[in-house]
Amino acid sequence: MTALVRYLLVDVLRTQRWLPPLLLHVAVLGMLYASDAGPPLPAYAGTCVLVYPVSVWLTVVIATAEDPVRRTMTVVTAGGWARAQAAVTALAALAALGVALVAALVPVVTQPRPYPPGTVAQGFAALAVCALVGVGVGVLCSRPVITQAGWSVLAATALVVLVFLFGRTPPVGNVLWALSHDDGVTSALAVSGVVAVLFVAAATWLGTAVGPRRG
Image 1 (tube, rainbow, N blue to C red):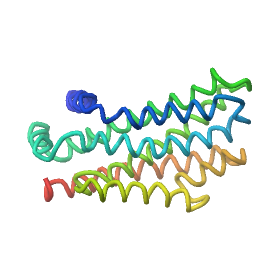
Image 2: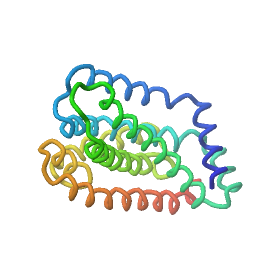
Image 3: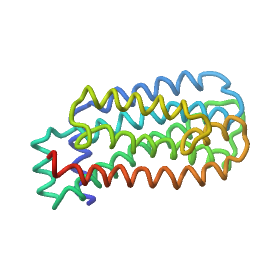
Image 4: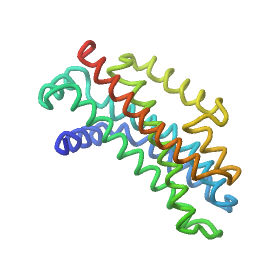
């Protein structure tokens, strides 16, 4: 599995399609933390709103780096759709968590307010939850589940917007509310963390189930 993830990483880096989402991430982080962003937890809530769609975008980039013919060859070499799809999800999760880690650490070195280790840990956990939800959405909105690029973009955009419209609903809405109000953060993270992991697993399973039919 490690060799397969490493192969996918090299292939994704070769496409350079990862640059736009990462540049967007850096640019918006720079704007958010160019001056005093306010209390740490509400500031992290704003960053979660950024990390979620960036993670969706990165996941779609990773999942579609190979064309269908090359993906079929990768599936055969990997020993089946399950391993190939798991490797895509694993690489996307690593990339999204890396984005979350950067977002958690940037205010520590740029903000005039103190960011205690416990607060940073909560911020990273919240960012990680939103990042993993983004991975799940990205997997659902890319090949082999959705094969057309236009429909993929529309579906991803719709799911990103819908999550923000559901208010305090887990796994993203309740985390944003808890951070913004500094209330019940630990319980919100616990519930949403479980939901996010299950969501990613379900999206990966769906990709594995659909892949042989469309691959």
